[in-house]
Image 1 (cartoon, rainbow, N blue to C red):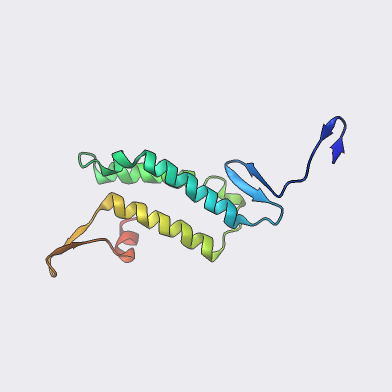
Image 2: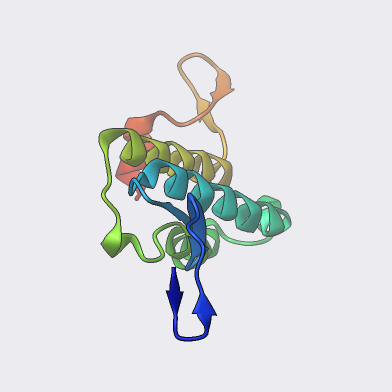
Length: 123
C-alpha cells in the first residue's frame, strides 16, 4: 500500500507497546511475549528476592509494583482466554512461592512449598 510518498508493506506480525500483534488478533502470542518479558524482569531482580535481609513485605510490594505492572501493561486491550489467565496465574504463583519461601510442616516434620490456596490467602 502506498500513501503519498510512504510505502507500507503487509506483515503477519508486528511489535507494538512491547507485545507482538498479528492480523488474526491472536493474543496468545502477545501474552507469551509479555510473560517472557516479565521473566526477564524477574530474573534481573532475583538477587533481591533471594536476599534474606530484605523483608517479605518489601519483596511483595516490589512484586506488585514491578512484576505485576510489567505483566499487565496495556491489558485493557487484551482478549483474555481461560488459557491466558491460567498462564498469568501460574507465573504469579511461581513468583509468590519464591518470595514467601518454603514453610515448615510441623505434623510431617519437614519443609514444603505453599499450596495454591495458601498463596491466595497471602495475596
